[in-house]
Length: 494
Image (cartoon, rainbow, N blue to C red; front, top):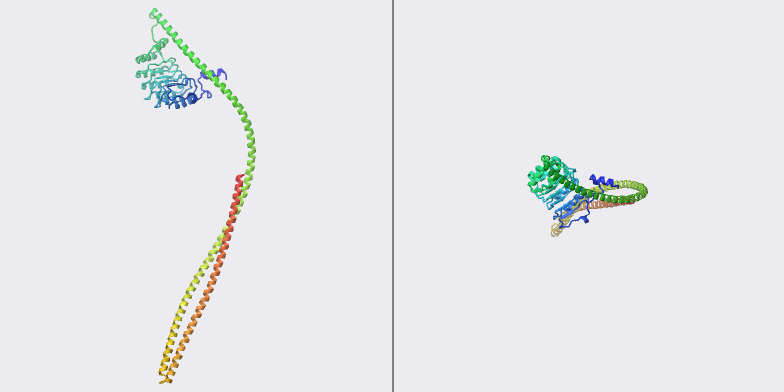
């Protein structure tokens, strides 16, 4: 934390990470009706300025903003330009003194774009000590051609040189609004400065300061020794102007020196705070190392236990996989047995179906035989009725003709009776044959019914056996799956 290191850091305008801080929201929060805000020498840095501008964009009453000595470079200048371009911005006075906006041409270019906006309300812009080169000054000069609100643009102690001064001169020929444009410390030639002074005077500016600067450079009077008396008076005037300018410069340098010393003291205070914080962090680091070593030992022990658990789990998983493979084999065997039983049942069903068809055919034939027997019975009944009628007729005929032709009628009646008896005997024989056929068909039907009953009993028994085998197989498979899930649960818990 030596003063020499901090002084060199501030002199080189370096922005260390531990110095650039974003402003505290509570300490720097703007009121809704605030018209001015100052963050001078807060060392915000580009990120802090970006965050600040995003908050300021929501404030429509702000008219003055001081960002002097905030370590602003091109990114921070871009954020400020976006703030100026914001539609709600009413900013009129902006100070960016003692920053590094000119280290990259993008910084002055961002501000130039904002100055060219039609709704810009900015009247005063302070860009002193920003290391703005000729190209950056050219960007600002191009913006002055189109700007109609800016009255004061302070570019002292930059590096405009001849090129930048001529660009400003060209811009002032078109701009009749700006009246304050100090260019001390820019190495601008005296002739260019004299023409700029003339143009500022045309705009109504007080050219006293510029005239004094021209006097110091020897550009306001070309003939110092033309008249000795007049020359002595001029020399006295120049001496007094030189003394005044030197006094002013001495005052400015005194202010700059106090500013630098203040920044050095702030940097030393922050460095002390950072050193104390670093010492605390070192102590925390030692404690963390001890804790890490302890955690490493615990992690090694846990790793060993985890490895043992993994091996045990792998063994259980392998056993479970073997059991699953065995269960799959049993399942395949049971499924094969079930398929065979189903095929046997299908074969028995086919045989039973064929027997059923045969029984149906036999029943059809029996029904036909029964129909024929019924027809024979009907014919036999008709024959018996005809025979009874004939007998009655014969008896009447015999009773009427008994006395007249007893012998002839007796002979004729006998022959007729013999014929009727032969016909009746034939019909009885035919009926007996039909009866025997019906009895045979009934016996055959009873045999078929008995075979069908036995086939149904066998089929039911086969179905019951197959169902029992299927139930047993399903039970074994469910038991195997349950054992597998139990092993997996044990493995997962391990």
